Image 1 (spheres, rainbow, N blue to C red):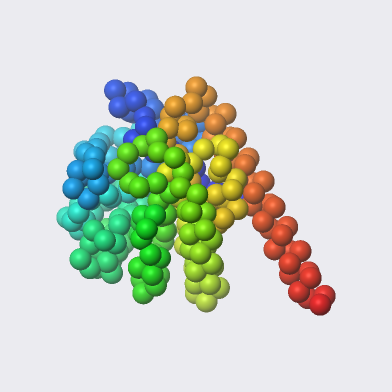
Image 2: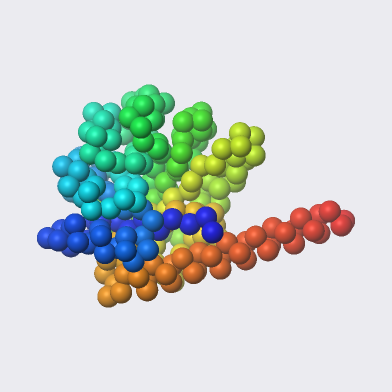
Length: 242
């Protein structure tokens, strides 16, 4: 199964953050999602490299840093040094998107672009060779606990088609991540639309049982991916027999 569950520590208990990240990884989390907000690009102020450095010794899984900041470039080496494995940013927040992606890769991290609900996917067209991940926001960034924007499913399908076409021509896989309002009851539909990496904050950290919630999410994703695979196989069978 191609699936990564990335709990967002934005919804964790910051008074015991080390314990929270250890517990959620022990419960089956694949990544830790780290939301950085600057009260400039987005209307909230959260955490910086020192917190990333503090939690790095507590987990061995990748730390996925989402920069909701403007400007971007000066923070890239700081988060790479602090232990980030994946760094994504919003193209509107960078004067030179190609250069910023190069900075992330040169720092030894996976690089990616983040698309707000109304941001066109065309930003990725000329930098696919520098992308390891594409993150689609299914809420407007700035706060946790928001409701999933249904139109994101359409955009996921469009992004998946672009990334699949690139994979066929290049042989290189680009992950497709979703962030905002992801819950047990909608993650299957999100997976069916094409996502393979799932950020969930309050749905996990607000649950009484982290393990049960993450397992339920992974089961829903597996069922959706299996159904999609069967549908593709049937479509191919009909095409070849026509």
